Length: 322
Image 1 (cartoon, rainbow, N blue to C red):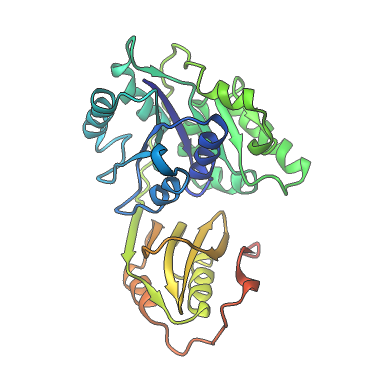
Image 2: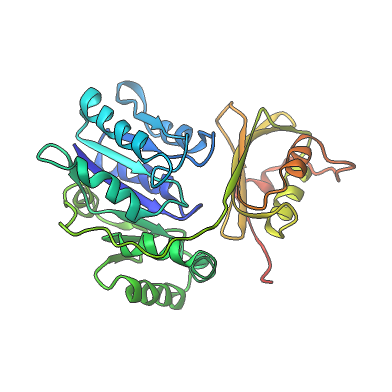
């Protein structure tokens, strides 16, 4: 069994990258999702990648972070996958606030002739790199320094200067990393196959200083809003710190008579149609005002009516620079 770690900060695009990996390589891996909190939104999205008899096996590990508090259960989960399913590939997507060094250390005792660790990957968003590493320096450095490949996401519309500056900053942390600046969808099939063929070097994980950040999450089920203005107002308030320091929010919910998906990360949010019937929303960050969020997701007073038109589908909204 070959184990591939796909790391990256909250909202970097790990799940989207894994979907493309499965599509381009034609593999049918087992995926171990370490969701932050009791939500399964990414697992649902990955499940849509498969169809028919090649349905993906997706295991959700939501009791805690696989890099620290629940490492024993995590190790047992990996061994269970190996013994009961024996897949050729196990892809592990840690929570975005997980330390890659700890995850590698937890896996290393399991490695033998039949279990191999492939070169770890970290997904990075160039647009938000500077701000995120300023706010989450040790976590960001830990993920980058322990990855053999750094993949840029959401960078197709960025200027060459932004991409080059981000590349240089990453090189200063990890001079030996293979950095993919161009959007990964443009990589040839040989590159995609190489991801699943290159074992990690025999070196120990590099630990950085420990953060003492207190990150929490709130998951809400069966959310229904009467119109789109409620959701837009909520997301705007998330961006401006009205509901706490929210670094990631995502979910599917019913707005009027339509199923809607929203994603918030990197000081931006998007609202799109959703094919998922299940309603579930998650908010991740520090100092969350859970009472206010619960109230706002239930009902807003005197919302300004906004019709749900196609003009809002795939709309990307960026918070003004502060």
